Each structure stands twice: as structure tokens, then as C-alpha cells.
Length: 553
Image 1 (cartoon, rainbow, N blue to C red):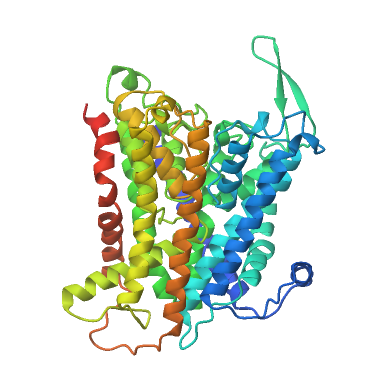
Image 2 (cartoon, rainbow, N blue to C red):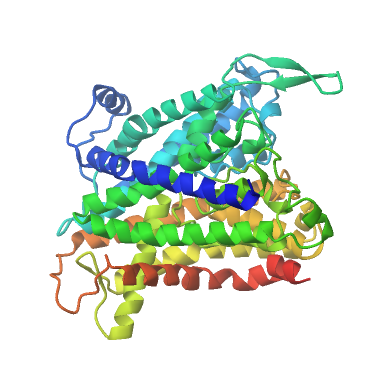
């Protein structure tokens, strides 16, 4: 079988699997957020934290809940790392340094999972499982909760109430993420991923030598790492490590886990606003962008420029022999178009234009389908921009889902779009201008610039993947990327929730003959164009200095 045919079959199998679970999972999640009942375990959690799940919150109160919970999470995870050497199951590892502990705590709480360390030689069992894995669950739940609050803003009228943050957080974790992760972990263990809370295993190498291999709760952490679009790996090699990703089936299964909730949330959106066709329009825009990137990435990596690449039948540098070019391209697109950051190959070793596509995928805002929750609310923001542009073109007041899009709403949407590029590009400019940070780049010229640009783009967009070649374990990068992940996570959430509150207060606008039909293919096409033009062009000068310059040289 040719590699290209194998790539086509993998993509087809993935699309079929996602299609099969789209309706049942989307409907189930809609039922979770519309239900008035609380499970017994949920009531115990509410009592333990002193929260009343039936109290409705306006957007400032909802935001305070998000920020308070995240602040406590950062402080707890930071402390856990700093006292690691005194904890059981530390495996003899020392306490994590202050700068790296801050970076890691900020990274995992924001669903970024940027790692400037080697997990298997830095973190013990308690930190890995009781700290990092817990944040994999709750950080994903926070993103989904904010998305559901925005959906309620569209669905409700003449009220500023958006639901209850604590109820949304607990329900997402208990009813969605925990059961799905449990099933996924069993599948991974059955296929060869390890789940062992021992110390070290002594292995015999191919040359007859002995090598110590750390072990831990890898399968359980891997399941929520992908399902929650987190990305932080137990091992430094991440999903290229055979203990995390044993074979071609688990590789495709992990891609499925990355995409399944973000895509299914469009169905949840359609059900909650009372029009599933609206969800299909958002899904279509997401799918078109995702599939386009898959095709482009596969083409760039299969192009075989030069004698060495032709002899290898593909750009195999930095790619796992078990997976090859096609599966690596599919994984990289899926992980950068979501906020996952997991890797089964190393993006710095892709062709120049291939690495540029990974950069562009994050720069679009990770909307196709995006992270758990963040992809949906990001695409809904872009839908507001799209209807505003359409309204300007035809001279009508823009409307979306029966809500007028006025100056206030557009200001919130514009601030959301501008904040992430500002964070990424300002930090990149500082790192390139100052004398010390640039020495962390392993390569000169455009590729070295791409390494720095990728780091801050990944941090600001809460992706977490790295371009490799960049020594990010320095005081400068630990501090600045830690700040970037916090600013890139919570400032956009402020504007999302403010927008949700503004929409919820409005009276519904009846449809007329001149109303833009936002469930039609025309609008899906307009939405794709808006994403590519409005957000893509923001980064074009930076891309021209990095991967484009390298690819044309």
C-alpha cells in the first residue's frame, strides 16, 4: 500500500468515527447542561466547597468564579512542585525550581501544558497524578464552562444570567470528562500503554546493555491529555514515546480523542439554541479548515524536495518510523488546530512550509475545531465578526441567532481577536531584540526566528507544543511564557463572558426577509473566509520572516 493511500484511509476512518459519535455525544452534553438534577457525588462536592449550584450568575460573578478557581489551582500546583522532595512517590526527584514551577503551574491550569522539562526525570507520582493530571481535567472543564455560558447568552433573552460556574465545572468533570477518560484509558492499556505506579524498570537494550525506564500512571494521564486537549506528556518524547502511544491504532485513537469533544460541542450548541442547523454551519466551517490543513500538510511533507528526501520517500527527519509521514502530518494538524500541543513527531523537523502550517494553525486561534470549549467560543466570536462584515456589505444592522450585533458586542469581539496576537508578537519581539533570549535558539536565521515565534504563539494560544531546538528552560522563557499563557487564557475569557452577558440582556429580534440565514452553506463559506483573512493576515509579516523566508531560500 502506498503511503499516500494509507494517509487517505486513515483520514477517512477518522472522519467516519467522529461522525458516528457526533450526534449521541453532542446530545448527551446538551442534556448535561440543561438538566436541573444533581448527582449525589456532585451534591457532595458542592457542600464541600460551599457552593449553591442553583444560583444563577451574571457575567461578572461567573468570571470571578473562573478567576478564583484558576488562581487557587495555580497556587496549589506551584506549592506541590516546590515541596515535591518531601512527598511520597517523589522517586528521589528534587523540588522544582521557582521559575519552572511557576511556568508549569500557569501552563497546566490554563490548559496549555507547555513543558520546559523532561517529565519522567522531573516530576514524581504525586505531582504527575495528583497535580498535573487533575489540572488536565479541570482546566478543560473551565474552557467548556465558558463556552456554555456564551451559548446561554445566545439562547436567553432579557436576563443577564449565564448559569452557575461551579455547576458547569463539576458537571463537565463528573459527567463528561471522567467517564470518557476512563474508557479511553482502558483502551490505551489494552493496546500497550503502561499504567504502573512503581519506581523504575530495568530494560535490556538492543546492544545488550541495561537502561532504567521510569513508569507511572501513563495511560490514565494520556487519556485526559488528549480528550481534554491538554497535551502535556508523561515522557519528554510525548506521544512519540511507545509507552504513551504504542502503535498505529493508538495513534489514530489519540487523534480521535483530541477532536471528538470540540467537534461534538457544535451539536451541543445547536441543541441549546434550539436550532441544530446552526451547529451544522459552525461544524462545516471547522471541518473545511481542518481538512484543508490536513491536505496541505500532507502535500508539503510528501513533496520530497531534494535527493535525500526522495530517497527516504518523504520528509522523515523527526518522525516516528512506526507512523510515517501521513500519520505524523495528521497528528500535527489536529494538535495545532486544537489547543492540545501533544506531538508524535517534532514540528521543527518538518519542511519549512510544513512547520509554517503548524504555526498558522495556532495563529488562526485554534478554531477548527479548537480546544475543549475554547474552539467553540472562538468560532462563535468569528461568526459575530462575519455577520458584522455581511451587515456592512448590505447596509443592514447585523444579527446573529436573533441578537443584534451592535457597537458594544463588536468591541468585545474585536478585543478578543486582538489580545492573543498582541501577546504572542510583543513577547517574540522582545525575545528577538534583547541580547540573551535569542541564544536559546539552536538555529540561526529564519528557522531560529520560527523557534521563538512558535514558542510564544503556542503559549499565547494555550497550545503547548514546541518547535524543538529552543532551550526554553531559562529564567527568561519560563517567566515570559508563563505570563503569556495566563494573559492568553484569561483576558479573552473576560471578553467572551462580557459578550455573553450583553447578548443575554437583549430582546430577541424576529427574522425578516432581509435576515442573513446563518445556517446556510453561504454563511459557512463566509465564516471560513473571515477566519482566514481577519486572523491569518495579522501574523503574515511574522510568517514572512520565519517559515516563508526559510521555504523560499
